[in-house]
Amino acid sequence: MRLVTYRANVNAAARLGAIVDDLVIDLQRLGAHAAQAIPDDMLAFIELGPHAVVTTTALLKKYQDQWPLGVTLPLANVKLLAPIPRPRKNIFGIGLNYVEHVAESSRTLDTSKELPKQPVIFSKPPTTVIGPGDAIEHNASITQQMDWEVELAVIIGQRAKGVDQANALDHVFGYSVLNDISARDNRRAGQWIYSKGQDTYAPFGPVIVTADEIPDPHNLNLSLTVNGVVKQNSNTRHLLFNINHLISDISCGITLEPGDIIATGTPEGVGAGRSPQEWMWPGDVVEATVQNIGTLRNPIVAVGNHPRKQPETA
Image (tube, rainbow, N blue to C red; front, side, top):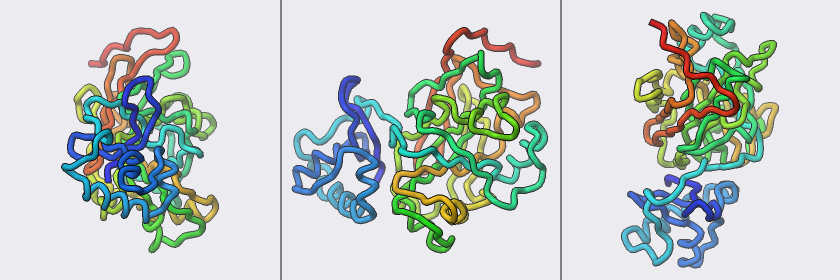
């Protein structure tokens, strides 16, 4: 399934839906028609466990092309939110998880040129999360080095505590796209949370694709453009620590719970690694894409007093 959180209009409450063709199917309303209880929000649905995915998928197939009255809306007419608009916990971010990104970071960000021996873990608060089309806030009084990072996001479906790598993917509910926005000039004594944890710094979406539809998450193309120009283009097969390893490693000391999000790291091509370095500015539009999931598009807007965009370097 391709699951979304949506609003039917600007004043409507957020609801759980599934995208089928060019329609959004309201799952709670479809369930009510079939005498099947389905919640109206993503976290509650995830908590129902794998059986809910199986039964809801079957329900969608049963009614496809014969939708009951009142359960569908044209996708073009709804506002998509982040699939989990307010995560219960911080997002688990993974740094330096593609070999070429380790190399470019060592040249420009004072990180080690040696490959990490263990996953490098940081976090992004729930207040970083925004949805497709929402604005990423550029506050010039805080940063002059706003950067992009396309990432495959993993959404946990079942509690994971001390799981081994062989069984780790059994705990995954689904996958999405996350753009790990970073203020490179806001790192503090090697700590990244202020650099990566500011409001609006985790665009997320547009959908969660359930794990049954992505049998191999380690062979997905991912790319990113700024104003239509390709900046990143890679594949998840180049992950240094794969998803099994990440889940196993984190769960050794931190219990992963349904709805938790792991942003698995970004490949080479970030602005800080370019020569000359490139940054995002108000008026720019960034688009992050992961194969079989979709494209997450967000504009950059100024907040507070803001200088004009710096001129391009020849």
